[in-house]
Image (cartoon, rainbow, N blue to C red; front, side, top):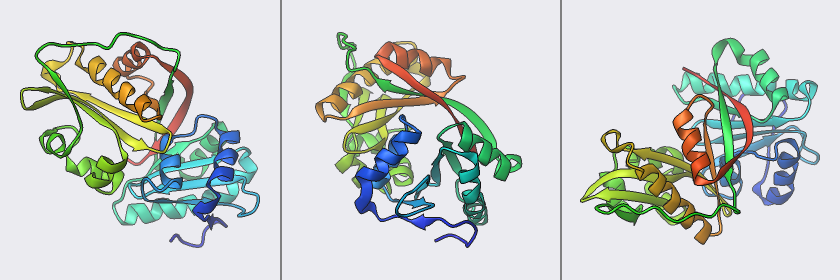
Amino acid sequence: MFGKGGAMHLLEKQRTASIKEGIRQIDPAYPVFVDAVMEGFIQGDLYVDDAVHPRIYFLETACGIYYVAGKREEELSHCSAFIVDVYERQRRQNGRFTVFSANQSTDVMMKKCLGSHLNEMERHAYVFSQAKSYVLATHSGYRVERTNEQVIKASRAFPPSYYEAYWGRAARFLSKGIGVAILDGENVVSECVSIFSSEDRVEIDIWTEEACRGKGLAQLAGQQMIKSCLENKRTPHWDCDVHNLTSIKLAEKLGFQRTKTYRLFYCS
């Protein structure tokens, strides 16, 4: 799929369990989209430096989001030419190039090989604490619905193009994802959906109509989403920019606990 820079090998998905453990040893809080690709929920591929004893992992999704993990800078430097090839391909095709970095070693490698071409962002990762208990919020005048075809067509934040980008198509999300919408009449005023999902994890994306903010609707949507995730035996995850104080406050109010702070590299 890629150019000849760097010796990276496409890995067969049959080895999912051992590969997950290898990644977890480097990054215990690795992103949900990594599982989503390895379990076939979304399209993507995983490349490693050594098919038998991998030390470096590079995962790509079809939507141009990537993940790189490795323990040592000297090992990671061997895949830098490969990553530059991927970057140049995406630039030629006007495609997205957003890399989630596992740790400081991968941060250093990314800065060395593409630092002058990419922007950086620091993000917090959260996971829902199963010990959290609360009374579900209620709001008279609004109703809660699971995300369905009608909600998708009516949504301003998560229209069909959103699911085509992240899930390949809306039908795949409706089959394998989870979503909750808050409606005022026929208008979607707040929504919480799984931007990525695997067999046992969900990464949450959330939105509230600007005119309806400050009414507790995002909290209502978030609580209903958490309830749906737990009913489906999936652990909710939440990521946000370190400067997004509103998102941080809501995550903590909903019962999420921070697991790490990491860097993301992206094209402007």
